[in-house]
Length: 322
Figure 1 (cartoon, rainbow, N blue to C red):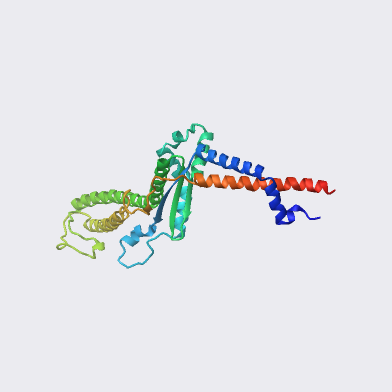
Figure 2 (cartoon, rainbow, N blue to C red; figure 1 turned 90 degrees about the vertical axis):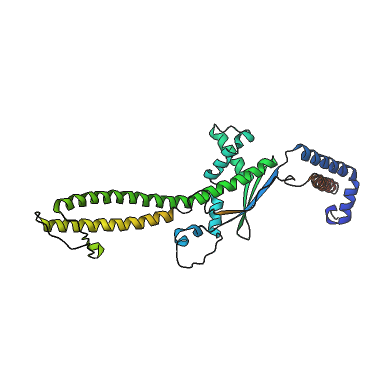
């Protein structure tokens, strides 16, 4: 004997036989879906889109190079990976949480380690980064408050720009500070050499420029004096002047480098993120609307109640045919 599950007419007859119960369950499921939609919290998703500039466009070698170098002004996949890594880091998320006062907004006590972890998890679950096919990034933030969702999304982009651009600016600033320290060290040495030259010139009565580093440039004719150790004085002054001239030349180069590395170190200079779309307050909540929710719940109620009735009748059909 054939099972009622093996032909469509038996299935249709079974559903028709229990149509009243199936209809009641479907209506109850639809009503439950409507109640859940209107009573439940609605979540809004704000979206900001931005692209990444190539960090090399602000490099000193490219800014001050006389050669024409061609490179893509847009960031590559590795730069996108760095942004995605930063978006999940404490250095970014922690600043956004503090700046937007999310602990108060979500009513989470962050004075305990458990509360701080809960807030970090909540923020992480609400934040979503999507890499687009055109080397752009979509930043989505979901919240029950549409204004807060847009504000957090825009603040996250701002902090990402600050930290990502700040990474390269910090490196240039460190190099700049190292060069400045070297210049100060050279200044101290030059001042010491100048004092030594001044004493020796007065001691030996030698006031001519006799530095070999100036290609034997001499102002006037060397005049001998009757002072003792005149020859030794010439040699000493010549050596000290050579050292001083080389240090002055080095300091000039260091000063040029320092000025170059100081370029673009201000906060508003050479930004690395270009915002294409600013996050705006979302109008509609995330997910299916109220009518669609009712339809989905009603369909699910119809489907599962029908399956249940088929299984229920099948059990009795097997029992009766033993």
